[in-house]
Length: 113
Image (tube, rainbow, N blue to C red):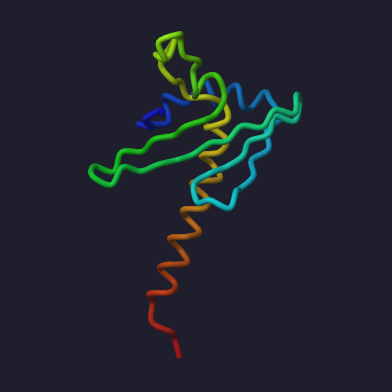
């Protein structure tokens, strides 16, 4: 799991995503997205989480960068890194949040006569 602090940590991943042909699709689960690499047909799942206690944001991807292999003792071989799949999925996640917030605000506003 990767803690998302700022856009700077995603810069390399964003550059790699621009070079590829990636398609993001929503799943039936909120904050879960499927990212398909159209060049090789691989499909990865990206999840986004917000910790309620302090509002920290986290992401997880099923690719090797976001989900590193473990050694024989079960310890990850390296720290999870932001990947290009997370960088493209986060764009759709931010859009979805904006739409949800706008719908909630519209529902709470009084009806104009």
